[in-house]
Amino acid sequence: MLTIAHCEAAVQGSAPIKGAAMLPRGRLYHCARCALQVFICPKCDRGNRYCSDKCSALARRDSIRMSNQRYQLTLRGRKGHAERTRRWRIRRNLTYQGSLDLPAGGVMAADLDATPVPMPEPAPLPVQEPAPPPALVTYRCHFCGCLLSETLRTNLIRRRGPHQTPQGTALDFRFDRGDLDDHSKGT
Image (tube, rainbow, N blue to C red):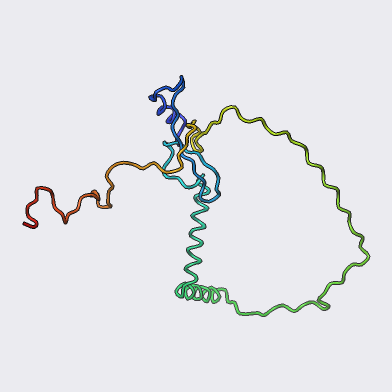
């Protein structure tokens, strides 16, 4: 669990601006599931798309559900579903029973002697005075609660360094070109 201390430690080494410590520049994004506006500090930011673990789990569940529905629309999915249903009916010893018979008369008679119930008057809404505008806009990290700069990013931070393949070799090196001092090719 990240705490406020990790953001404050990053700020301590910053140069002061007009007597105040420089705050980290956070990122603003909207949750991909519930569209909640989220502010996140650089220390907590790991490419987040969701506002919480709950939204992430619900989005994952929805994604799996949609994937299963797409599979059910394929011929293989329909055949598998039909086979599972057939085995389930055999286990339950189910057969088609038909519909139940309707009771005699089938339609209920309207009660013509009933008196209408009067609706109560809605209560008037209380008049609310508008709240005064805040003196200073402060942004806080949604996850750890640390203070953020007034300028926010909307894109991800690009991490620098060589990109690695799953085998661990850098992508900018190509085996088919050889090294600069390799004279075994083409002369």
